[in-house]
Image (tube, rainbow, N blue to C red):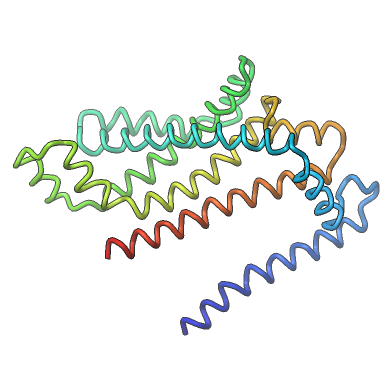
Length: 252
C-alpha cells in the first residue's frame, strides 16, 4: 500500500507536467506571431541564456534578499501578535480586528498607494509584508492553539519566567509545523515580491527584469524568469518539508 502511494506521488506530478508541456507546445505551435507564446524549447533556450548572464544573478540575489528580510520581519511580527492575542485577552479583539482589516483590504490598493512613493525597493517589501502578516498570524495562532492550556495555566501559577515558557512550551510545539509554514510562506513572499517589483518597476530585481522583458516583447525571457520563480518557490517548500520531517524524527 505504501509503495503504491509512493509510486502515485511520483507518477502523478510527472504525468501532470507532461500534459501541461504537451498543451503548451500545441498552443505555441498555433500562436501567430511567435512571440505571443513561445514553445517550451524556445523558453528553455532563453532560460539557458538568462542563467548564463551575470546580471540575472545580481537581480535575483537582490530580490531574494528583500524577500528574506520581508518574510523574517513578517514572521516575527505575526508570531508576536499571535502570542499577544493568546496571552493578553484585552488585546485580542484589537489584534484580530487589525489582522481582519489587513486581510480584507485589497492588495492592489496597497500596492498602488505605496509604489507612488519612492524608493520602489522599499514599497515592494512593504506590499509583500502587509499581505503576508495576516496570513502568517492566522496560521501561527492556529499552531499556538495546539498547546495544552493546562500547561500554560500551570506556568502562570508557578510564575515560570516568560523566556522559559517561550522556549520550553511554545517553540517546541510549533517548530515542525512552523518550519513547513516558513517554506510555504517564503515561496508566497517571493511571488508577492516579484509581482510588487513588476508593479513598482524596481531596478535590479527579478520583477524589474520581467518588466523589461514584457516591454520589449521578449515573451520567452519572461516565461524563463517565471520558471525560475516557480522553481525557487518549490525548492523553498521542499527544503522546509525535509527539515520539518527531520525535526519531527529528532523530537520523537
